[in-house]
Length: 118
Image (cartoon, rainbow, N blue to C red; front, side, top):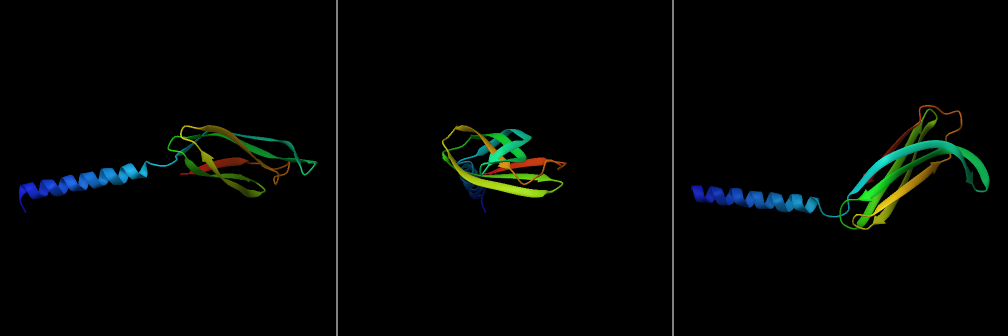
């Protein structure tokens, strides 16, 4: 193979890589920040119930589109998950909260995890 043929193949590989990577960066991209967790009573079906509230800020750093949110609360009494699909415009910001009524007032070792996809 000639030197010119090798250069053409190398250029083709570089262009293909740029096209593939550029495609990966398109679409919505959620970014989570400022995760908080606090325990307090909340009205559930007309009755006060103790639980844990997980709050966070979500920003779409990509193009407009759907972002899948998964919030997990784990503690000494178990693990619970809330999930939601939310549409955000490009650059849009939202503060979201999820209340978990399952843990009791006596629970320990509370931990919250928030994931977004994409």
